[in-house]
Image 1 (cartoon, rainbow, N blue to C red):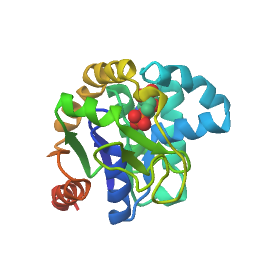
Image 2 (image 1 turned 180 degrees about the vertical axis):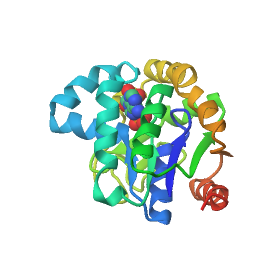
Image 3 (image 1 turned 30 degrees about the vertical axis):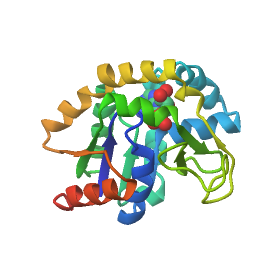
Image 4 (image 1 turned 45 degrees about the vertical axis):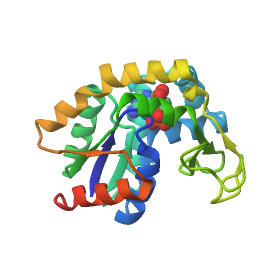
Length: 217
Ligand code: AMP
């Protein structure tokens, strides 16, 4: 399956993507994770991306689209993938369509995670991410690790993303509304959008998502 996951920052895209990708046996491709890996490795691409990310803005398409396409061209993504955080604007969605068409494949679904705005802010403010594996996500009240500051899964150090500060979150939400939300209409015209509520326990949302995707298999 080829799936795009959309939703505002804090909707739980990363958390859900990790579970869904595992259930569906497809790679989880997160452009945010790819940027963060480049930043921690000190690559040129990471240096280019960092200032945009810290400000809550989108990294320019020239950098992002090439990086996403390179990742999708890896052998593990040949038979499907779950895109998390890409595309994030209409021109990226168009570039993705062109790339898929060149490979003579299509998206199966666009899963839209819906969550009220006040919930988003609460979720992001308390979010803590593992330094070793950013798909290991915790929350200071909703999903506490057994030991404070330590990842339950791999023992990595938990930290708060720099772009999870309140001001940057507001900026990211604005960017989501103005630039990313229009892709939902773009995909709606292709009949691909499945919307689910992202409220509730992590496993409940995963079950809801799997059920919603069933019709698209
Ligand atoms: P995420 O981990 O998906 O929340 O992404 C974190 C940040 O990485 C975003 O706020 C953007 O600055 C950048 N980013 C991730 N994916 C994209 C994308 N598809 N286009 C542009 N910027 C992106």
